[in-house]
Length: 119
Image (cartoon, rainbow, N blue to C red; front, side, top):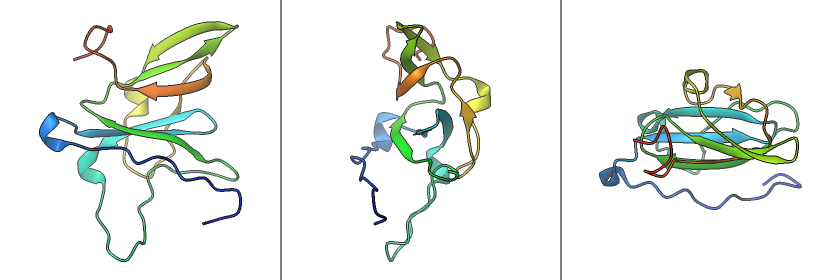
């Protein structure tokens, strides 16, 4: 492990619960959502690149869920703000992803059934 690196908690994946997408958020506010089928299982502990990072960027969070729609929560002008991911955030594993928009300190989650845009 590199100096200064931290280990993220594991993201549970339950295929029989309908989980079919993975969402990854980088420290610079880029979001990438891709189909779970794109995750390879490698032997020997080689690892798999999830999202493309540059320079000192890090992987901030990763979640698994149902569908490509992800809830993005953060603040804007000191007020809570919630957005839903857009088509520009969906792509191929290991790509850079797209910025989440006007949200500071974003966090991602799959929308609950009662939230708009949830399926």
